[in-house]
Length: 177
Image (tube, rainbow, N blue to C red; front, side, top):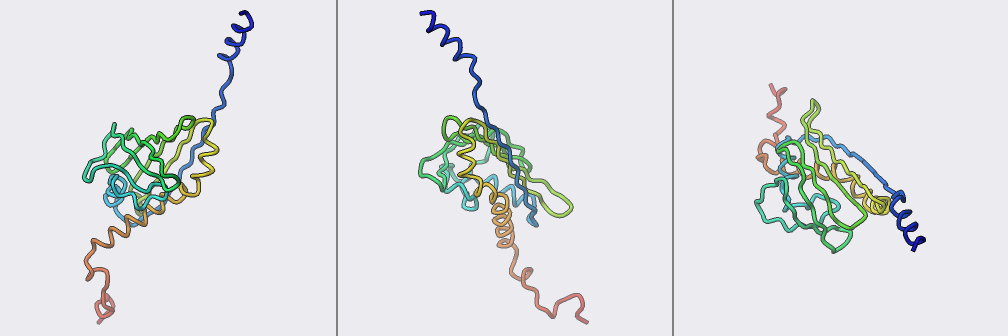
């Protein structure tokens, strides 16, 4: 009986292995803050996202804190749950991804206007003992999220511009006398 209590006491004082990883990826865009926010805030259209294949969010639902939805990743057909933590419309979206026990993943999208255009930041925070394994699988995809978002927003912004404004004839230049 005394051995059992000693083992029980030793188990409580063991140090757990915790691994934490934080990475931030940034991209500059010519699209406006509103165009980029529309792409981030539209949870039904994740065609631009390299990791997500689809979501079960109803069309037209506005992203807000406390929203929980499911998403299917491109890596496996098993759906993961995503919990929206913080939303500052036009600026910030922070979500927590609940995939498997042993890993806590937080993702933050941040959009801000700069002198050179609009900057998009995509931050990933992984915690838990399975983080190195998950990161080795998802890192190549995570590195492309910001650039894919920028490309999708710029393409959507170009599709809304009238054809006449996109294709100017050479005779209508400012140096045409």
